[in-house]
Image (cartoon, rainbow, N blue to C red; front, top):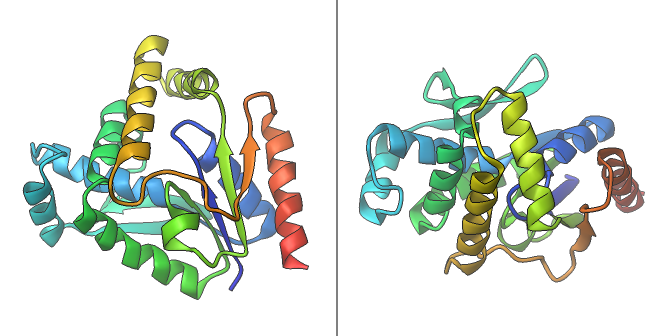
Amino acid sequence: MFNIAIDGPAGAGKSSIAKAVSKELGIIYVDTGALYRAVGLNALRKNIDTKDVTLVTESLKDVSVDLRFVDGEQRVFLGEEDVSVDIRLPEASMAASNVSAIPSVRQFLFDLQRKIANENNCLMDGRDIGTVVLPNAQLKVFLTASPEARAKRRYDELIAKGQDVEYKDVLDDLNKRDYQDTHREIAPLKPADDSVIVDTTEMSFNEVKEKLISLAKERMN
């Protein structure tokens, strides 16, 4: 199987780029962040403190998180409910960051992620794909950008979806996520030793897409 791992901080554009690159290469795209968001959303709906290890772990016993491809598009399901829209709300983002620091949650989703990669040519993005989930991926990319650029992109995305948000709040949330993701004890966010670091601060979407496609084709040949 040919696997591509893309890691990077919140708002780096991983999902958008990953979708475009995987489509161009004709391989499956796996949005692992969406899985953590779904677990976080499940905890929020049950009024569980998403930092409470015991309660979040207990909540995993009766939850089913799945990725399904509907009309060629990846959708995220919590049980039988399509939560692809709800998991993109700001509160779901912070909940995802909180639950991702819990070992039982990482193990719960790790098995699903590894199974998908073992059975398919795929591109997987997240926080620890190259370092933990797919350490043997043929291509590892660490996609990043300045906090301000990432916050602006996320802000524009939320505004386009009709969300009532302030840029400062988006930047503050992003900085909090960065700190939590890089300082957690379990699988902290960092580039794999053999990853290609791509800073997209001054790059257009198409420039980033073509860069990654070029890197992938080099490894495929």
